[in-house]
Image 1 (tube, rainbow, N blue to C red):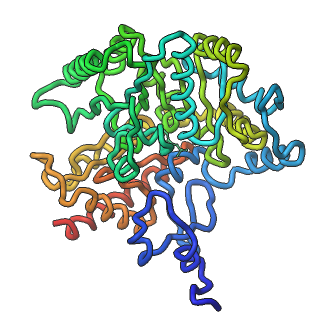
Image 2: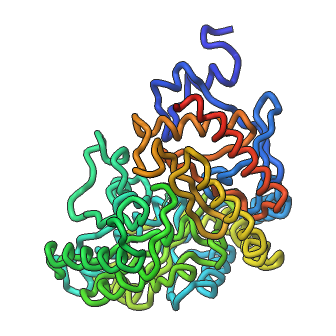
Image 3: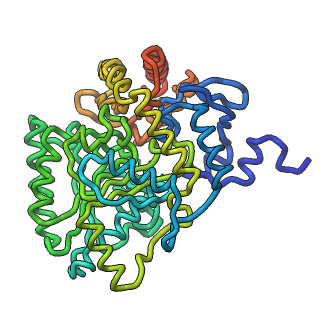
Length: 455
Ligand code: PLP
């Protein structure tokens, strides 16, 4: 045996560079190795079961072991296991999926571009926006707004859009021409006594001031997750989108809805844009598009954007953008089967049936001594841990309380995700009421166990 040892844990430490991990701590702590999944549960290599309260990373909507998706992948693998759609080539799974998505779009959309991840979809959206404005002869209209605590990915451009310090720090980001608007989190950012509507009005005024300061002729687009996920599950206040969309329209600034988490039923409607009243010019989606079984993402664009791209490609000779695996036939086949299952099993109906229990149990946690706020919509939510419920003071250092509750939840057989001191929940959409109760029973036990550790 080598000095590394034979166990999966020791080989992990020897060979794997982990995403989103404290690499130094990992050298001593090592991994939790997940071996298999069934329904809403995953099992580690010692056969301990966990309810996956995050559907992996906000994506495994149908739970683990959905045989129809396995079959869809196997059938497509046998028929056409790989192909591209560059230079006028195409294939039916890609065509069918594009047609299906256009039919499902929350506002009229013209075309679908496929990529492999949420980051690539949003990166593509950035490039399309720049290409579009060049086509329209507006070379200065290129700046893009996103929001503090927004999350749009980790490529150079999308990490720049992401409004979280750790995605910029020491990566020499953000790049030029990207800036961040205020975070629409009422609990943290409203003034004392300010109603949701008043807060929304102020945010829209601040957005307008920001666009005017940048110069309206230089601002091209704004990226918004309908509900902000990785920044701590922030549900914007009532009337927010109505008000900011009026500002964006006034200055001819495109709206990009990043539906990477909210799309496909998560919020109780097919799209988060419908739940939140957004009319995007570009929509990006991924994750639940294939129930997370294979990597695939999509960018939907309005006809105006598509027509401008046609003109520009005519001028240049090509539309010079695309990924080898854009519309990968196996991923597309799995996505099509996922969408068929959503429809046949009335997944939206199921979310609407069980979400009231999920939200009731979530909001009941606001009474817990460690919880300052419980927030969410549909089957997504978060609790924010505070040291003092009256002053909303955080525990020091920020992030420790989240890590403690995260670890204790895992000990109680529940996987959650700590984002700073907010604990997110985003279970598979297929979750039953019984398992929703299990999620909250376990989380409550974890919170109770955290009191003596944190105080
Ligand atoms: N956009 C949103 C809203 C996300 O939540 C994520 C990932 O969590 C991304 C984009 C990036 O997606 P990916 O990790 O697939 O690149």
